[in-house]
Image (cartoon, rainbow, N blue to C red; front, side, top):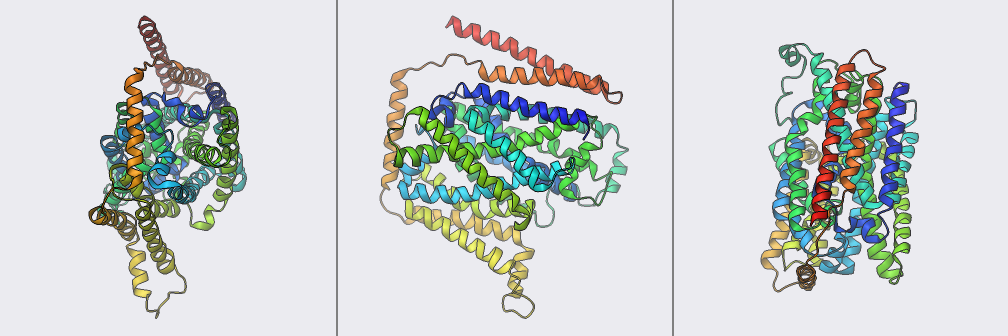
Length: 567
């Protein structure tokens, strides 16, 4: 990277801390720290959910698959959109209507303290592994551009994320997610425009890529895998605490639905756009490290300063995923363990300080795990295996308990442990066991598992737990006491809502953060364009567009503020 790139990256990090500092002024209670006081706008919640699943892993894992295999990477990412739309229709509004302040509170009411402990610790291990892959992926991108070791890159950026999450809470997470969405959209669009303008004919491009490059399914990523991927992410988006937290943080069930619908629509229409750079780059350069294909594609066309902006946005995308998980689990340990079990009379100030302590502790665990990702098989292998084997066994019982009055703690534990143990046995005890070689009784079975690994993961990690839950639902008698507690809590909340007749005055803070982000970004791009000869007018065009949108948002803020005062 050049000096303008480093300056851009530095300014971006400074901007994150400015947003975090401003958000910290709104964080005076644990409710504000972990659920934004149930006053977050639905569009910010939706964009934040979209970016929570988006990380440097998107560029390393899916960018690598796009470079290697082609359009199948787009098809896989579109599955997120289908899942989010289904969650919006069936699940999101129901979470908001319950009246719980955290998803952990629901688990404790529905499955008891034992269920909360089981779910918290198993999901914590799963998320630490998954999010550490994203931090590792970010470091892979960074060391392709700057003279740092992998460990140094992980530690530096891990510390930055931990600090701003500690300071600003969920408001900081939401607002930085919106910022990164803006920056990523602008920069990836610029990369795509520049790459397309420098390409030859489509016939030349098609001749340079593999014959199966435009197929929506290839090899182990077949239709059955895509079906499983939709199912996995229905349970993940509908049941994972980072997403549930966003459904709870908005003002009403309808806002929760709109949040998930926005998330889903974006993931239906944008995967081709996000993955266009590595797809196009395969037609220009072959035989490179696929994990670095995305950043090398961008580096090949972006002018100085804008590459730094792209990496800054990649960092922020990863920061979104990491900060979301840190905020969620810090909230669980603060509200549902520290306050519930250690200090029930803790003041709001004490709870905020405790939440920041847990954020730092979890961040240290995350950084440590990210350093060991290469020893666990690398980014693509680890992230796909984790999601396939763990998501549905962990989240399906919780989500099922949102609708069912029959299943209870025992069913939750049996489903999770059965699927997980069988999956681990097949994946690591047989398929990847070096002791099973030619002549061994299980050698043929091990080869079958290896050749059909994705289908086996879907069968064990998706189909099996769902079938077990259907069986429990059919044969269980009576009503679980946790279901009764949930119904009583929801009824009390809805009665309180109907009698309070609360009105929410217009809050300009979220829109102002977006406006200022666009304004600063547009001004900085104008400054960068003054140093360029090539691509100057393209950069200026983007800058003018950003400044125009910022002006439109300022007009909208004034109009909404005026209407709010009139009421």
